[in-house]
Length: 442
Image (cartoon, rainbow, N blue to C red; front, side, top):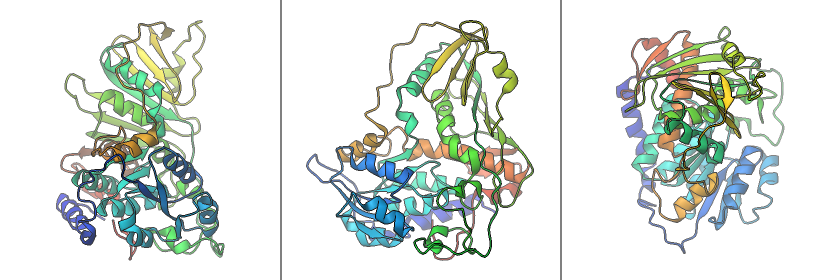
């Protein structure tokens, strides 16, 4: 589907009023310390189960009112500890029926259902937590960002590592000028989500509502293996390694360098497959100068053995031997480098790890990724009260997904983020969004 700026704006405006009947429910959430916080959950086992346990156990949530899951077995399993929660198979039915009984919604489904569920929650004026990547398409991400801001809701994307101390200390190093101005950065992760193939002549288990699982995706017979995890390998439901980890490892790059909308994106990988996500990609993002920060080139690598090998081979540990490092990030500055991962970081000068003077801590330690969200709701926070609010994480997700757009288009794309437009390749705009199946809306 070709997506013009006019169509984007018209579609967003139409979507905002789609559930206008509920617009008076919580026009402004001015909560007091004695008000109850009641939540509903879309998904309840696996990652969703962990999210729900952490949110409900944050100390701010009074009641898990309702839970939805398309898998009856998982619904029973995941709701067992929430005895009073009402159970639903269809999140749309749940949100409509429970709208006046809930204040917030957690969304943790396969990627292709993130946006429909989160958008419905936001239009109902419910504070929303949604797993990463925030959405399945670039257009969906921009839509959720706008809905969250317009409705002044407290939001948080599930990039949990953002709350860790390690990322905060790295951001302080970069912003503190420990390695000078940064004009180049790299991030890599060794995952491979490829080889997806739809099966035929298979029957959905009785506990799985396959039609609901498909959600807005194209109608097709049950395909064994998609549920509950291998959906990440399929374009219809996921976006491969880039979509799964780009919002985690790229988060630190965006945060430390104040990145938002890249101006050019170029992705290489294996031949494009219509069904399966690629086994590896290398994405080059060009970002313009930001204030006193110079233009920067950020390169992303995913795949079992895809990384900036030649560059990493030049790095030495304190003992002068090769620096051994798994998945991670590398910032290249005028006077040195910073290498990092989820839990560690080191400074290098002349390609060797060195001791350094650490800047004074300036970024407060997090009270917890989930508690950031629940506490902000409880205390009357706004759209920017959390560190991974949809304004920040929406732009991050857009950039990640633009890498898949360039890959599927088979060419570099030039991006005008303000206008929401690919300026050099109109034919690539069809990858910015997708047609929703009848009965499903954004």
